[in-house]
Length: 409
Image (cartoon, rainbow, N blue to C red; front, side, top):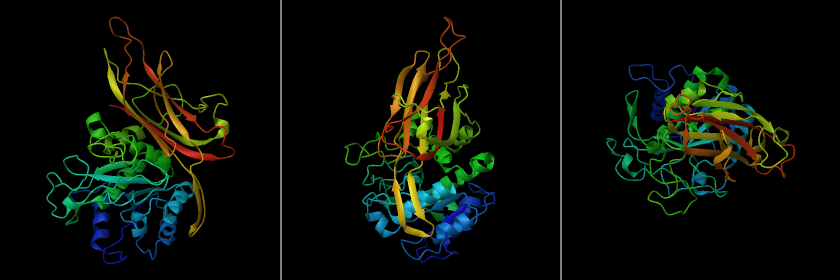
């Protein structure tokens, strides 16, 4: 793993912040870290907002997962992608690395990181509510109450952040911090633990992103701020959906990672898949479905009902020259949609069809489980998860990598 922590005193490797973040990840004392077996590389030497050497150095060390807890001022005030955002998008696709980055501590800022292929994370307090400037629940940090999880969408309208985790008082190696800086190493640590448990996920950031985004559990935890997703400016008690797909859940992530479902007919409560796709992999007839179908199913019972959550994540069409953040072009070439059909019957029961996100998300879909042993006998309900290429007519030779994950709760 690579840690990239900008110290308040400069870009030092032995700053208190770097020590804390390393301890949060790999503390092997009685208060363990998130990924004790991880090998850490601290990539703190960054000279300017066009710098790429820290990113390239971490890739050269073989780090699969990169955690960054800071942003340049220009990134916090600009609604468009920075050169580093685009370069990180390219490294995600070119070098198969997962980049977990902080959304920020002030919702007066623009979203700090906006790359299509990144995992941008916001914060909640220990009481589960979105960090909004109010006192942080039962936390004791005196500096934490002013933090507000950054949530503004970028200029293209992406819904960000992708996910949230606790940002309240966190202790490690005798140090204590709060705010969104503690979130990237926590979520990156969960991702590292997943890749240790399921080594085939190393080098598949798209699948890790989908698994982590699909991990939030019960409906009550799906939206800590109690606000549905929307676009910036929509009136709501918590304004826009500042908590992404919800509160990360490590156990659910591990359960999905343990059950790859590569398109065979085996309906499952937890599952994931990954791979590449090109236009030729989609049907030429509308709605242009992907050649691989996946299948979800609720737990058996009489009757049985559960909620289903699904996330599809894929890469943008990005090119860069190695070492140069100013050389990149980064576009979302494929517009993919999620479609869910209830079987038997083939009824379309849910879909996600945004045009600006590099992911699609279905949450809290109430589904019926197999009821073959019920009296009277019920149907063996299952649900087809289909991927559709919405802009089939305009896509030419582009290919992309994708990850798909789902679980019932």
